[in-house]
Image (cartoon, rainbow, N blue to C red; front, side):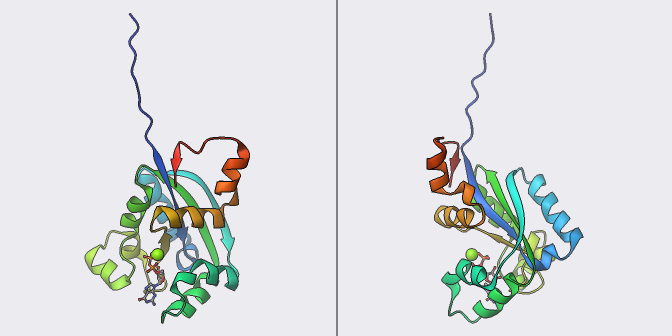
Length: 166
Ligand code: GDP
Ligand code: MG
């Protein structure tokens, strides 16, 4: 008799992970962050290196416009190359934000020293990485960096997006 196993396919969520200019500038730190992604069981769907214009940086962080750190954040994010990843995991958004650690560098260093920000964050602005904060942000941010993964592109391809939840 033939033995069969039914494997249910896990539903994968996608998130945008960015390595910010402070970390991309240091090859060993960039490599360590890449390693951290692999060690934490993410699938790297794709990745891309790019440098932002000031306008792109302003648009991406427009939700923070008016906050005291906005101008320096915009300057910093357009000051050098970024690496963008699409990461897939069953709980990608939360999982990546946990591995990144807290936003503020002191908090990261003292309460979560083994996280990426706890290990490599330099200041509250230069904190090594970005991660989408909810499915709606992930969908919007992925489309910004990877237009081929936008809702429209899926629809035009005629394929189902069923394996991936944004
Ligand atoms: P994130 O989702 O953890 O990246 O944090 P937010 O969405 O709240 O902020 C976006 C980015 O703005 C952060 O990653 C930091 O680079 C910067 N930022 C946030 N809060 C502060 C702050 O209090 N001071 C400074 N200097 N930068 C901040
Ligand atoms: Mg955020």
